[in-house]
Amino acid sequence: MMGCSSCHELNQILETGTSTETVSESSTGASDLDRYRVNGHELSSHGIVYEDVPYGSDSKNDYDLILPNNRAAGTLIPVVIYFHGGGFVQGNKNSLYKKPALIKEMTALLQSGYALANANYRLLETGEKEGVIKCLKDAKYLVQKMKNESPKNGINPNKIILSGSSAGASMALWLALNDDMADKESSNPVLRESTRVAGVVAENAQSTLDLVRWEDVFKEYNWKYNEGLDEEMKARLYGMYGLSAPSGNVDRSAFENATSDYRHKVDFASFMDAGDPPLFIANKPNLDGPPTEKNLIFHHREHAHYLEMQSAKVGGNFDAGNEFYYLTNPKSKDVLDFVDRVFK
Image 1: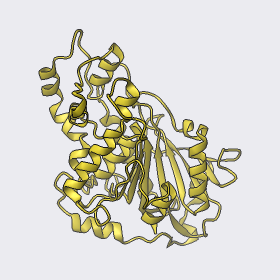
Image 2: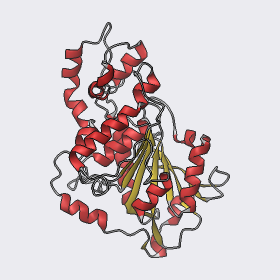
Image 3: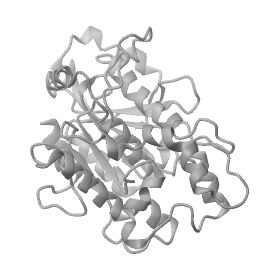
């Protein structure tokens, strides 16, 4: 990570909680959530569903919270927070409920006594001025907001796993691999909360949001980030960093100079160290070969391999430091197995 100044304190914070910390029933604040409770949701038979709960000022800043039916009264429970994919330009939380495999996974988590959160966030727009940090800030604030509202929302603030696919995976990795971004001097109590989490489940992950570094990821294929771009991809390349795409070809030197500081802030592969939470990375084995089309560029298994190599450089023993699951690993049966081991 990027120079943690109080790692001992952070480790103490992360280690204080248990899976079910007891709280008084009067402090749960259930009535605050009641206005968002819905029936007839895809997961209603397995949990209590609160839909479109706001967490920020933008209309995109909302999330669904699903508490398991078997939650013991007056307990704080672990939560898995989902971020949808879509390349930061499209998608929403409701798309996850249309995926049978994810519904099966969510159902299993609820039946195991874990809560779920499924979040929307702001997307990149045409003529984007802020760039991908806008999306990442939303993920950060959501985690801090949920921690700040514990025990009102029933969530254990020390037992949070982040989960996402594609862009959602990058959001989860950026937040988890960063230093604690709590601002202890802020007048906003939400921003004073720790951003540290217990683990990450990342599917079809990118290796970093510094797209220039993808040349290292795809080194064996001699891939260049500025070659073979159509107008859409060129606009996305610049828009990632809050810039408008110029006409003509990408000027490598000008682009890299203009984006250097920004790319450093989102290069989560460079944040990795042995103190990171455990990572479950699942990039599909068939996504290999020369990255000649968009799906391969964004979801290639070499992204996972690159993270594995970076983690090995700083952590060494994955069991003691980072736990890394790349393609297949006999130590882990599935996502639920990983979540169980992290939370228990």
